[in-house]
Image (tube, rainbow, N blue to C red; front, side, top):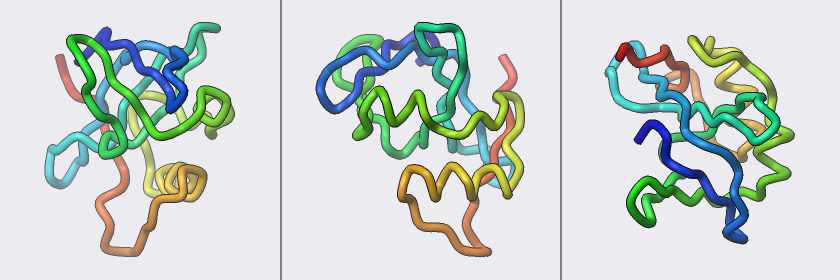
Length: 106
């Protein structure tokens, strides 16, 4: 997964997977950290990514949308930051949702 190329809905390269954030409660993947070509990092919902080949994922967002996503860091995502990301990507949330995340240890 790490190092996989992430492409947008139009097949343009968005960036490269640089990390995976897990739910602190379930230890399941929640967010993908993606290093953009300009060196910045953005988070994408794990559930939105589809593997399309060896070391390649596609997300249902444009590269511009990913680039414009809120910068919430890359090691830990608070519930507030996760709500911002969910709102930005149009994902539903509720008080019971498992939406925050912590970087997976290597």
